[in-house]
Image 1 (tube, helix red, strand yellow):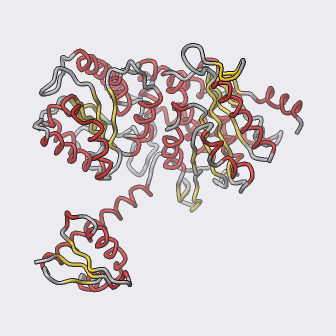
Image 2 (image 1 turned 120 degrees about the horizontal axis):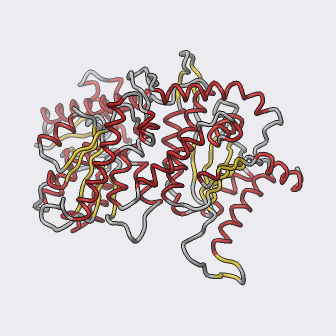
Length: 530
């Protein structure tokens, strides 16, 4: 296709969304002329399914739950007066809580004001808040945010070391719907110890976001934590950014949550539009379907040309892959659906993996994200008449053209400026796209049986570890190979797991396991000294 024809295709297919300051360019996707007309009946079915979702139907039959993150942006849509009231009251209480913290009415045990936030969560309880905190950070932030989002002891140490003496001025937010998430609980226990070691009461610095009646809820209320906020069962972790999970840390950091929710709500209105070509989420979902043959046959590469969006691809990995990665469709047929997502940022990608994208395996489609406004204020001319932002824009166009020239498909989302409203709109755009695409491929986007399977298997490993350690304790002074120990436990088929447990235990002083290494690793022996 020559450049003149490409320009005509660009004009014909550009989805313009002035209400959210955004455009979607699909001209470099090689869909056929009749693609949209062929897919129109399917996308109309998807619109109906989304309407039903927002009306409060049971969308997650595994847990008998509704899916209502859209109500968070417009409580009037909630299916009951009670839910509407809870959303509105929670929003007001979060704003008041943040004001009280900022003015010092709510203050730490031994300091005049809180200056730092430490969020403890995992998955959707961390990825969304982390992304937004980084994307919207400024020199005028009222509080500095930190995150614990794993169960890595060294990770705990690094974050706590970065906080340092400011721990006495740190408000810790523990986020877990069930209150039983192991990673979050472990982080909380580590942080509790840090407060104790500093001569501080954790409870006088702690806030919970959790389900009413959960173990965490009981701990927060009985321990008289500073406050607790609800995490409703109709809000999934990966779509929880406009619930207390996201807006409490935002409000404390000093981000205008009214603007953020407003941007999400404006995008929701736009993406409810039943006119397909005017609905950016519908267009995006159809392009995903086209690019992957509706079977995930190609990966999605997310390339945001803005440093503030560097965590966006990480956030989208969970939103898209946890929602769409499903073994079975709604009819119970094995389909192994999903779209793999990875990404970096421009122009870092130019010096990393664009070489493969252009010349290697053609197993992807790219989503470029362009932000027109470079910065607040004027820019330096790094060359006569050219700024560093001009270079960023030219590299985006150059990379996009280089991919197109070699038959690689891409689409481009252009945002006028990156601010609180546009970040909210970007998140809402992809949330709706995921829901529409899931309907197109006949899967449930709102459950995650694979995640639960992994948790159960991890629990079984912990139980096996306790058996191993108990056996070694009872046989102090004796040493065993992994195979010997597995057989002694009546678990010969689990020898590999026993080997991994022993290798880990012998590398950490906590378990007092000594390893007698052998040139053949599987003949190494392990024991606890008398």
